[in-house]
Length: 177
Ligand code: AR6
Image 1 (cartoon, rainbow, N blue to C red):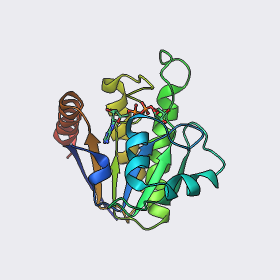
Image 2 (image 1 turned 90 degrees about the vertical axis):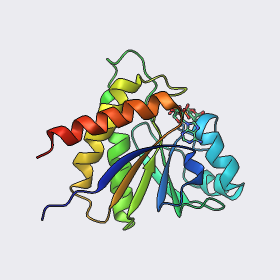
Image 3 (image 1 turned 135 degrees about the vertical axis):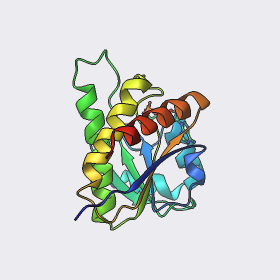
């Protein structure tokens, strides 16, 4: 069966999205941090860190799911992106694993919509132009195996990131049959 979910970029705050799952760009402790991680923990409230404590951390490239507490989303999928160290330390593969594992977990929970921040491109310094290609290709590959997913949102926090995503999505559409 041919199936393709809608993929789109928006500019905004991921904590405000009423989707089935938002993705958190976390660290291996899963106990919170700054950037989007800090914003998600602040908005979700203290019950989130209590649930995260039970998860025993998370490896780079892996992902774990929790409830979303005070957020309008239903679930949070926490993933740990790689710190960029020049590109020769498996950072691209690790970033691809993050996106794929998040889509996989969303499928396991029968979720229909998922929103991603731009994983690793903030404090972890992954170059956005490389990260966006990995984000789109790995999500596209995994959603072909995940029929529950109808919509994938790439939630950009800056105008620049939004432009990069828009352009990459347009290029993808041009080469699609
Ligand atoms: N909504 C959407 N995107 C956001 C938001 C938001 N509310 N806030 C920031 N961003 P970063 P990383 C964007 O640094 O690079 C934390 O301390 C941001 O502009 O949050 O994966 C963790 O605990 C950027 O485009 O995540 C880790 O220690 C993107 O989210 C570390 O940072 C990711 O930036 C992870 O670093």
